[in-house]
Amino acid sequence: MYVRTGTHSVNVATAVQTLLLKFHISGIIFFGSSGSLDKDILMPGDVAVPKAVAFTGVWEWKKFRSENKGKLVFGDFNYPENGENLLGTAEHQKIDLFSTSGEPKEVFWLPISSSWYEAATEELKDLELKKCHSGKCLPGTPKVVFGSKASSSDFYVKNKAYGDFLVEKFNASTADSASAAVALTSLSNEKLFVVFQGVSNVAGGKSSNSGISYLASYNAFLAATKFINSIPTPRLACE
Image (cartoon, rainbow, N blue to C red; front, top):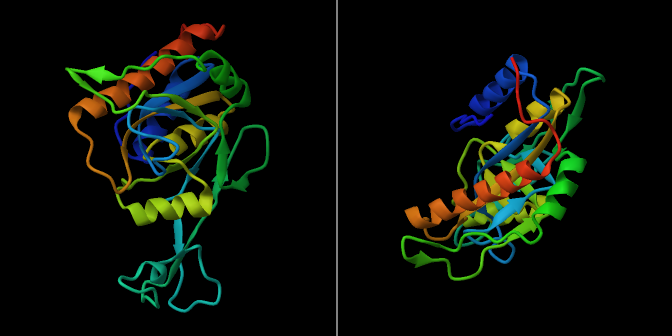
């Protein structure tokens, strides 16, 4: 079953939860676009298969000069020189993970289902991705990158300084607006899930053109379809 959810985490989570309530589904295979936070690891056209995702847009905004400072210190980004900033600091918060079989717990990283992640690494290790579209080609050969961490929030990260912050503090490699919602809903319902992210741009870089955006989406689709064809799970979702 193929479903488009639209953007923003609340829409994605609602769509996934509705599917799980309405149909007998064994797992969720999510694919879509993302932005690279580190061009040395991921470039446009590549596909990321993260091992964990996190909501990095959930903040506790601290008071100015609070003793308990958050990781995001706005004064560190003053220009041309660092210093104090009335915005103070913000702490990235954990979220509550509820499940049917255990007590709720606070988590930050949401792990991809290990069995499906390992299956993806084996099945997609030699996958040949599409390099050209409408006569225009990527500067390099696109690749599948395994084991990254994905940053997810309801805002689109185009700012290089904030992208560098996510890399430095959380070792994140991509930014998107949906993967953590898929992860949280799947884990809460104790369903298998895996994420395939086609990289369409680099934070702080030039805006992607339609050709690159197409290749990012197409390559994520290639990865997802090859993975689907490799798993033995029945593919008929019955009401």
